Length: 338
Image 1: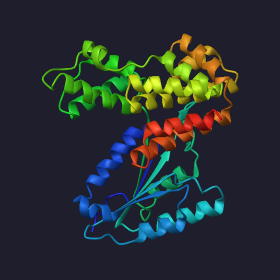
Image 2: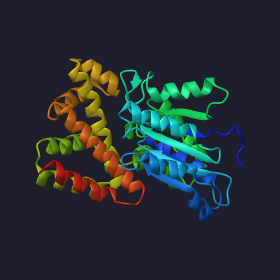
Image 3: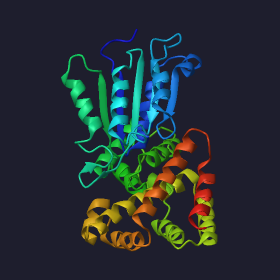
């Protein structure tokens, strides 16, 4: 039987999907022998799974191990009404200690707060209540925010050390700038750079400049412009050229980043904000902020949200092996430019 001190419910939320993925992988590794672990790990998607599906998975007894693992993504998708929320909370109270239920909520930090889970959200209130009651569920809530600036540079140095190598501070800052604040992309580049130096010396800034692929931001801007103008043929040609020059995952990450920046910019525009405010929020120079403002004007807020969610779905399908990111991108281009 698992120790009572172990959390029964984990709430992971935030915009650093790479860190969340790492955390999930660590929890799955703790399940032991993969041949047995697979029988005790269940993935559910809140957009399609019912509360009954969750109940059946969470209340099932573990097989040959002390604990089951149930990973529930998009748990808030079907909890729009007070009655559904209460039914969900009632179910959480019944989760046995032989199950670790992980709730994964994708979120964005804008204007000083998380958008899906602001401080007054009913889910966070419930978590707080559990901590205050001796008989409440053991719940661990953790936010995962994308590291930026010096924080990302420090993270890069830590990841290099965890991988068995080293990177200088200057090189870490250079890499942080090149990957545009994307930890997943940074991790891919760290692996390539450590192989380049053969783990024999620290990665220098010159190594980063020589090895790390840096897709020119103008190319991404031009590609997104073709999507806004619904120029399907040109968009396909530009996407093909981008993928020819760099790996598809790298191109995909840059496109995701661009639409995240456009959503942040759209927020500022809708609140009659200035170019300086866009630069501050996106952490980019004023010249880039100006271009973002012009490009954001070619999309509606609904359109940007829809595209971003489609990109996240492509990313999820790629990670779970249900699709290839490159195929997903071409399919998205076709859908957006019809």
